[in-house]
Image (cartoon, rainbow, N blue to C red; front, side, top):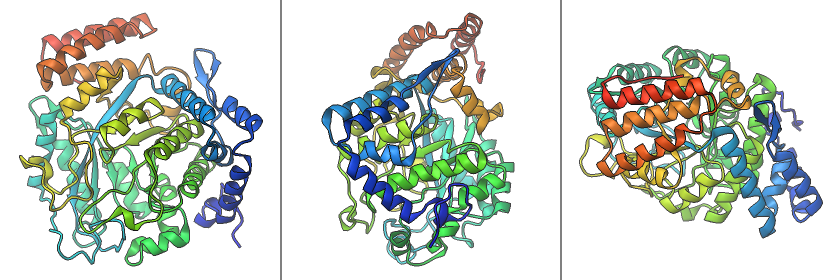
Length: 482
């Protein structure tokens, strides 16, 4: 029997079934242990240190106790601490991005995805480089600066060379004042050699969702295709880091399996990356199963309510305080509004989950991977964020300045967010307002920027940011960054 070892490179040892089972038993036993819960919450709180704050985070066992706790007053306290952590480390910035679907050809048999090989009635499509360029221009015309590219697993139709060509095309397109400054990559688990190629192509974060950490459930959900190999998939992040990619993004698909099991596995995976590589995941995504072509979420036994979903997000924030958290347009405006308060730091906007969807006037549905709940325009999303007290950020500075992996975490931990990320967010927001925003959104934005400039603690940084914002508004100069 495999023995739990967070430093192991074997999937069944760093995501250990026996350890998760014992963790869930411990959590259930202690879910009303107020003394223990208070101790865990106190451990999670940010502590003042020098100019910044320090958080120790929580172990998978401690975080699982909080997730199991159903005492209303303690759940509210969790939310309050999660909000405090988010504001201390990320401020009120919310980073914006959009997915770009390159191809829905896929040889896997995943039961929750309409791209599975046996689905013979979905339209199959793969973008040419000319079509990729057209999609990028459409996204630039909205105001996007950051993309997450998506493609099914198919070595014939979607080889690594195709992905690399697409990345090169995306970075090459400069349209009016538009430019995609960062490409994140969400493709199937691959080899160290291929990860090295992705790193050399200048990607931002490599993202791979585990879907489920329950090995038996994983194999049942992936009955055919290369994704059936649980160990190869689960160990992918170690290969990515060996290939030089130090920013990786985790995630499970909530609603497939037992959410408490998935939560424990997710935090254990983050602990493993920290133990082996010295830096945890750059992001954690929290997608839920949604309706799609020939996919009915009701067929799965693990569906979770909005309330449970929100508590999961808060507990992730408590456990891994320095990690960015992502919620996509899978979720409604109402759900996303609540989750922004308790830890989310990145959202997608105006997403289309179909291949070639951005160049179409009307949202196409024939090649969609899943149903999009939040169908507002990017302008509407930007205004919504600002009206709720958030700063929409299009910043990609850290990636282009080499502040990745442990270097970004150091910036976060040392309390320099207000002197670096905060002004960068304001400058990129100004670019958006000048180049793309509606008059109504522009008015809200300029008022917010004037107020937020006053929060920059370093006077020199504040003066430079103020001057750069004036230049953006009054000239054609762009792409300032700290």
